Amino acid sequence: MRILGIDPGSIHLGWGVIDYVGKKPVYVASGCFLPGRDEDEFNERLLSIHREVKERIDKFQPDLVAVEDSFYGENVKTAIKLGQVRGVIMLAAYEKNCKVIEIPTRKIKQSVTGKGGASKHQVAYMVGQILKLQINCPEDETDALACAISASRI
Amino acid sequence: MRILGIDPGSIHLGWGVIDYVGKKPVYVASGCFLPGRDEDEFNERLLSIHREVKERIDKFQPDLVAVEDSFYGENVKTAIKLGQVRGVIMLAAYEKNCKVIEIPTRKIKQSVTGKGGASKHQVAYMVGQILKLQINCPEDETDALACAISASRI
Image (cartoon, rainbow over the protein chains, first blue to last red):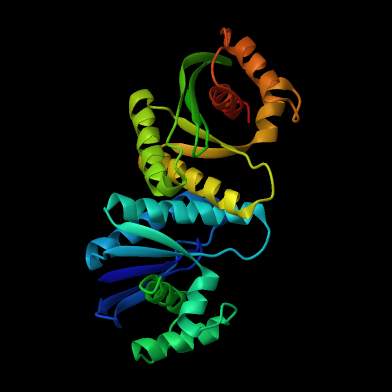
């Protein structure tokens, strides 16, 4: 079973692919991309996120897409923007006939580190241990790998 | 200039098309559709909303798509869901090379009735007056027409 994990964001978007060979997770690929920075071009960023996610799906042919369901803070405007990003990611998965699930951040951290309140650094460390990798990449990328790992454990 | 106004929602979605002939708004078409009700099928609803909006754009060829930027309440989960709906609508417009804008509910009400705090009923009444129509349709539909009317006045 192959899983594409995504840590959604309109500034940085992390992604990670793992294979499950029996119960053992095996690293396939991961990365991070920047849909853009300019506030005025949010529509274009949505288009770019939608296209990039479809390209990852075409390339890696995952059986499942797992999207981190995160929200820190109470700002409704930010929540709507994050929702817009997640909406186009979920649509991309659905258009490619991929099953898609959303996993709350706390569950991902719990699954990977044993602690729902773990720091990003602790998550990155455990992702390295689980996948037997030297981790030296943006935390959006390790968060996406953590999301993919936890998806197989739910 | 032709404008497609949308009142986004994952349960009911209202839409309305108006033409601007000089400064005069002329009714073209409007409607409401139900992407679905079942909470478990939210992904399918996103797909259905994306497809339906693209179909309206293909059929009516608007120059501009105006989406109501509404949010009542403080529930972040609801805001994320509404964001997901708006994300796929904006993506549909963008994929069809349509300009898309978001207009806050208060601005729409202000523009159509003169009062930012007008009721849905007052909005519906004024939409009828402005477009010289007997209004007898769901309020999501009159809200969408109000959104299209206000888009041309911004």
